[in-house]
Amino acid sequence: MNMVMPRTGLNELSRMARVVRGLGSPFVAQVLEAGQRQLWRGPESEAAILGWRGDAAAAALAMRFNAALHFLARRGAPVSLAALYRAGNGDFDGAVGEALETEDTLIADFLRRTPQTNEVGRSGAIVAALMQVRRQFGLPFELLEIGSSCGLNLNLGRYGFDLGGVLAGDRHSPVQVVPDWQGLAPLPAPLEVVGARGVDLNPLDANDPATCERLMAYIFADQPQRLHRLEQAIGMARRHPPTLERGDASVWLAQALAAPQPAGVCRVVMHSMVLQYLPSQDRAQVIAMIQDAGRSATPDRPLAWVGFEWTETRSEVQLAVSWFPGQSERRILAVCHPYGNSVDWRG
Image (tube, rainbow, N blue to C red; front, side, top):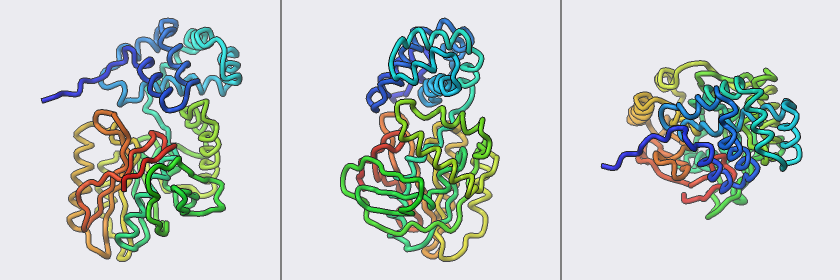
């Protein structure tokens, strides 16, 4: 039997640099490459990365490091790092090395914290999946999201979407999601959300400037359109606060699925880039309880399960859907860019 061996932190920054360059972010790739070369200048950060236990790729360790550097650059110090980010080019080794020397503790703190990306771009693929479910049952949605972070995707009913030429949502919304679409366009269907709530171990408050600054640090510095969209989504969350609770995903989901479901509403469990952070036992428990709830679903009280996640080997990001009763087997609708920038539709 082939075993997937854990990726430790050794050379993880260099590995991820190759990945993000392929994703169209050469500046971030150079930051990570400089980080790999200069890591010795930040002993606390070096120890956190080289001593990482478990799968460093699944833990998004390099993205934590990148976010720390972006956070510092947005703050304006060290000055050389801020200048590098403003110019988009320059002495990467000098600026990143100085940051490791002077801000080692802050960078190490980022490395210890689970990433909070809450990428709004992923909602485009999720809405495409919801269209398929809507065509199946013809009912509005009650959304249950695990790993909600700031809850920005709980507001997807307030966003506008252009999915391969198929329009959905609010065309006048300040948040517009327009992924690069490949393949046939999804079949159109109304996007109607009558309820949405979520859970996170550490939910973020859209009204806290410091928290939002940390959230924005996870956006790639050479993708300003994503940063603008995130700022708009945060503004939307301040005007329309999502219903977000602090708690364990498996415990919360068990309670949410056990709550009475109104007739004429399709309940949807959704998640994006969350399962990789759950312990294997919790991950199995979440999947089992969704499938168990599906066995009790009826045509007037159906259940759908939409996931936007890496495959186990991290070879691609898949958009998958199941619905109950009916399509209980997982169906792969699309292969997606990790941040939803592009969608290769297979549905």
